[in-house]
Length: 270
Image 1 (cartoon, rainbow, N blue to C red):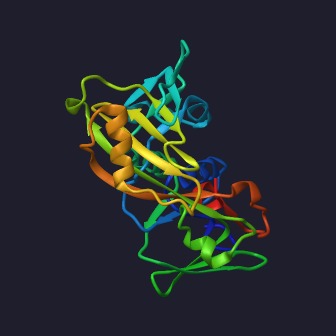
Image 2: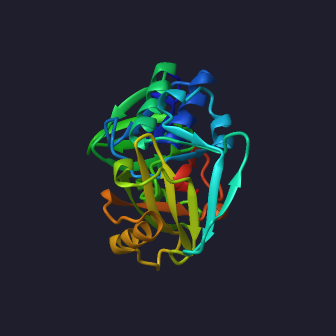
C-alpha cells in the first residue's frame, strides 16, 4: 500500500465513469479501491446507447456485451414524421446496462483494482495529505485522492458540496419485445414530445428500449406520457419493466475547489 493512506485512489461508484477512472489509474500503477452500494450485476435503467466516438475512447473492446449497432438515425419534432440520417459506418451501438456495467467493472478488477461493496457512506474528510471516508457506520479507509462517481443522487456531493450549479433531470423508460411489433424500429429521437426533452427508441437484440426524458426538474413526466409516446410511434402501449431514473446536469458550472476530490459523471452534472 502507498504511504499516506490505504490506497492511492478511492473511487466512489462502480458505473462507467467510476470504472474508467479506476482503470486508467491502475494502468498508471496506482493502488485503487472502488466502492459501491450494489453488487454487480445490478439493475441500471438507461437507454444504453453508446456513440462510436465514446467507444473509441474506451481502452478495451466491449464487443462481448454489444447488442446491436446502427448507421441510421431518425430525428423528429414532436410527432411529425422524422427525418432519416444514414452513414456507411456505425454511429451508435447499444448495450443493456446491467451487462455492460458488470463487464466494465470486471475488466477493471482484472486490471488490478479492488472492489468493496458497502452499505453506507457516512462521512468524507479531506486534509492536506489525504482523503478519509467512513463507511458502514465506523470503518475508515484512507487514500491520497478520491473520485466521486456515485451518480445523480451523489452522496459525496451532498457531503462535500462542490462548486456546482447542479440540477436534476428525469427519464422514464421500458422495453417492448419485437414479438409485439410489426417490424424492428430504427434508432430515433423525437424532440418536444416532452417539455425540455425528447422521446427515444433504441433497438436492442430482441427488444426496443423506449423512453421519454426532460432536463428540467420543474417538468413532471408520467407513465401515461410514456405509453402515449409508444402508442403513437410504435402502435402499442404494452411496455414491460417501466422504470424512472434521475440524470445530473450543470456540469458546465463545475469548478474544482478541492485538492483531493474530483467529481465525474452524473455526480458532476455531466
